[in-house]
Amino acid sequence: MSHSRKEMPRDISKTIIRHSLPRDVLDDDDIGKILQFPQYALDADVPSSHFWVIMISLFSGASAGEICCLEVDDFCVADDIHCFIIHTRENRQLKLSWTDRLVPIHPFLLNDLNIIGFISNLKQSGEKRLFPELKADTRGWCGNSISKMFVRLAKEYKVESRYGWRKTFTSIRHTVIKKLKSLGVDESLIFQLVGRKDPRSNILPSRDVPKPYPLRNIYEVVTKISYNVDFSVLNTSHFIIR
Image (tube, rainbow, N blue to C red):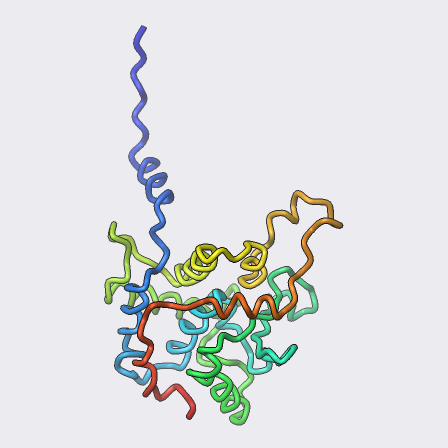
C-alpha cells in the first residue's frame, strides 16, 4: 500500500523555515548602515536616547528595556571599573533577580563617546532618569518608542536579511552574543554579561552551579566587543560632551 505524504500547512511551513534561519544577527555592513541613521550621519536634532541607546547596546549586549530604564545613579566604579547597574523593575523593590548585574562600560563608550560627561550633565541639571523623554507604557516598559524607531530606520536604510526580513533592536543583543561566542568566550561569561540565566543552574545541584565571575573577567569580555566599522562619523556629534 502506498501512503501519500501529507502536505505541511503553508503557514506552519513558513514559520518553521523562518525560525530556522539566522535572520536577526547584524553584520558589519548592517552596523555601517546604522551609522547612516540621521542621529549619527546627519547629527540630527533628535532626543538623546536615539543616539545613546543603540550605542550602549552595541557595546554591552544590554536590551532596550534595560537601557531605557537606566537612572543617572545607575552607574558606579567597582574594582576601578566604570559600570552600568542593571536593575529589573522588581529589584527596584528590593527583590533580587539573576538579571540584576554590573555591566562594565566599554572603553569606546567611556573614552570616545564620553558617556560619563553625558551622565554628569544630566545630574547637574537635576534629572533622575538617563532618558527622561522616554515614557513608560502600561507595562512600565520604557523601550517601546526606541524599538519602533529602530525598526522604522532599519527598514528605511535596508538593515535586513538577504531574505528581506527586517531586523529589530533585539538583533543587536543577538549580534553581541554571537560575536563573543565566535571569539571562543565561555558561555557562562556571556550569560553573566547579558543577564541570561545559565541553563546549567536548572540541572545541576545548587552546590555545583557556577558562581558569578569576578567583575574583571566580565570587563575583559566587554573589551572583546568590536566591529570592523568606521565610527568616526560620531566624532563631531553634538551628543558627545567635550
